[in-house]
Length: 209
Image 1: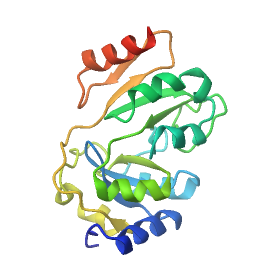
Image 2 (image 1 turned 90 degrees about the horizontal axis):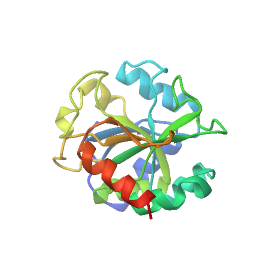
Image 3 (image 1 turned 180 degrees about the vertical axis):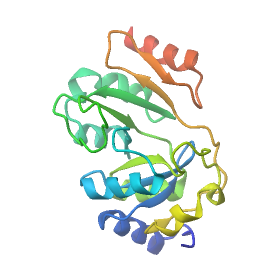
Image 4 (image 1 turned 45 degrees about the vertical axis):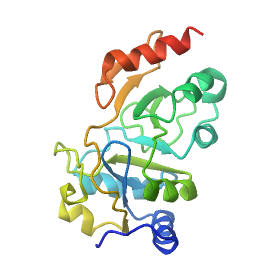
């Protein structure tokens, strides 16, 4: 599939593809993401099949803004809502508690937790996500493959299977930093575009206020 350039028609096409349950490639603030609607299991499973990964591994819920994230996971408002509102948007993924076990097809083997992101997206993807509201997202590579910084880094078999592709040019190519907020103390699970020390410092500083 040829990548789509920014324009109302192309944005409409990408939003329609997501609504139809098709996978879509979007540029993020870190790497190219393979995305789908999170509201139904089948589109998520299709993404996993494209990547060649098992359903026991979790994927992130990527929201257009913090308010949309709270609509998807209303329990976050009272528990860590102020913290998330202060930290996001940013190239960070937070693992948070999911007591209602929402979006169980995203949570892998740990349905009581879920990964969430509110990124600073480049404009083509921002326009799509503002319309879609929320997507599930994982890096647009085969399982264990290199993180795609350019559209041509995405394997051809993944590109061909997508309902829409948005070209955002060259991206940083380093995935988001992942922090676990489910325990008494925050913990870095993966160091990415923000160093572990900086990520922890941001969380601890805001939590102390």
